Length: 302
Image 1 (cartoon, one colour):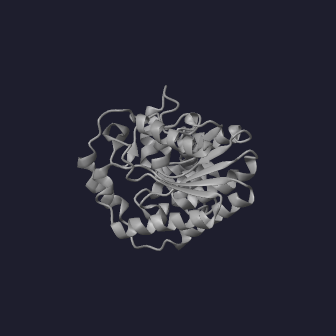
Image 2: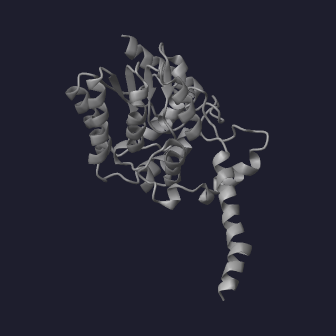
Image 3: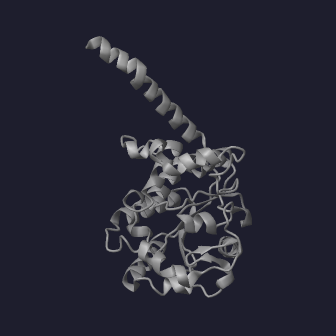
């Protein structure tokens, strides 16, 4: 019986383990925004004077190349404030010239935890490629083997080494079909708002605490903070829960009033952003991203 188990292990189990390890290595070798942004910022952090964070609203909406200073965009699709907090502290010591931090706060930001939402699979990117240790003992956040999108990517990756990298070398998400075509905002708005309202009513204390912690650390280092609510299309913001939206705005205004280094820029309903500026109900296209970044730059240079 013992010999049979040894033979079984050597014949089937060990090769299977080796095969799975090889496959995990291959999947991790596919370029990703997480690994790419980590590599790019690590190379540029000594000169960076402005860092922006946030979810896809920031990833696609803020263009570092439009600022009057060296800037980098560390936002990611579905990125929650917990990961803004992690990335801020990962890089703060490596950015000696850092003078400005932009923290987008969207309608859903204060009640969102990445692992609890539909975008939970994004969390593994921070564990595998960026060194986040909060999920290091959880297999689902440490294995690409269970990421079906990566299997498809592995087959498509031949001859297209940046297929999973959707941003430029400054972190701005400009590599997908995020151009200037006329959006179908009204048709998409209802489902988008429903998705963003999943956690409305959940506790906001943890995320408010994380924002406050970042702001305090910035104040100690004479770094200015801009809390930003990015522009959205009327079809989107007209459907938002007014009570929760008011609470979000009040908290941002309170933080700006409490800390001298902090400004709150609420552009959610800014009428200067028109139909042609949007990719969909809550994301800006290239034209809109340029306009938003120019507004931010104007605030900074005042």
